[in-house]
Amino acid sequence: MSSKTQHYLDAIDPFASRFIRGKVRQLIGQRGFAANDREDLLQDFAVDLIHRKTQFDPNAATWEAFVIVVCENRFAALIQHRLRSMRDPKRLDGSLNQLVEDDGRVVSFGDTIPESQRTARSGDDPAQADVEHSDCRLDVTEVVTSLPPDLREVSEQLMVESITETAKARGVQRPSMYYSIKALRKHFAAAGLQIYV
Image (cartoon, rainbow, N blue to C red):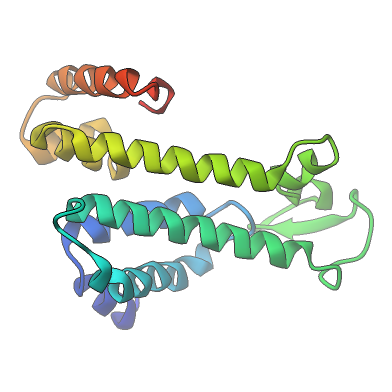
């Protein structure tokens, strides 16, 4: 990691830094983002959060919830921008069977087309899917912010770390984490969002 990127990540707190790293890990390997984009993506997320930090209102939500919403929105914006550039007619001409390099492996061009484009001709509306995804993100954030403090911390850690890492960070055995996860499932089920836990 370059010193400039580390500087940006140091300018924010450990939770935000971990969450940003998790979002970047999710991006790498999809929609044409490659491992060599990691530095730029880390910097992009960090700078965006730093710029939006002035909008944080502690009376409206916790800092962690604010970080999650800002980073999820940036995540969606980066994917949308990449999809637009991939749809650019000047980008590539040729057959869907044409072999291209994608993340260091050779695949057919058709395999690099985003799912939203594959379903566009079947009558599915990618724009509607984006709206539904955005609404869902807000619903999940609302549930997370309404959780008791201990469960909120667990849920926020589980968004960026594995069960084992979360248990270790909290100083508990991995099996005891399942009690917290069971409680989280109840809260999400009460909000009709059980599929997200």
